[in-house]
Image (cartoon, rainbow, N blue to C red):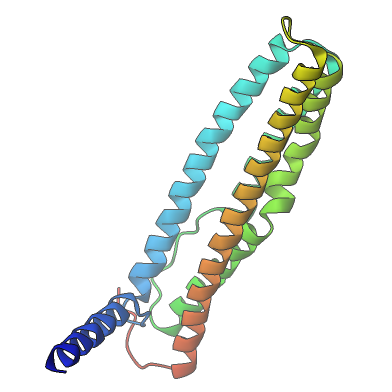
Length: 206
């Protein structure tokens, strides 16, 4: 009994410490808000770098691919990449937070969380859908216009279909990861709503 009681006390202490470390308060909201904006800024920089690589790759594909369908698919993929970068910049750019404190900063941070949450929730529309036409044209061009020497037509078509399934799975995984990210942001928004409802008198600090 004593051992179980000691273990329960240790568990309660650990849980209290975890709650203390992860709790959102007006005292730490300033640091959390700035860390979140830094995270958004780093994410966008990674996306911009990846977009540059994608444009270069599909530009190379446009040059070497035979058949108008694969060339057009490569061109559409470049257009889609530029569109995605523009959408990310317009809808998901990091903002510079002003030197606010207290509840006003909570409102600003909550609005930023909601903006990024909505961006992730709609990733299927602005991030994935633009690549569908180009990807389909490349697959169709590969299926109907280009045949790899040394393979039977049936085997070549099976490989193309398997590649199309893999691409679809990648799209699905990207959508699921972003949906999961949106849920995480929603939980942080809920924490802020709880904080606002309590109307804590603590100062946000600089």
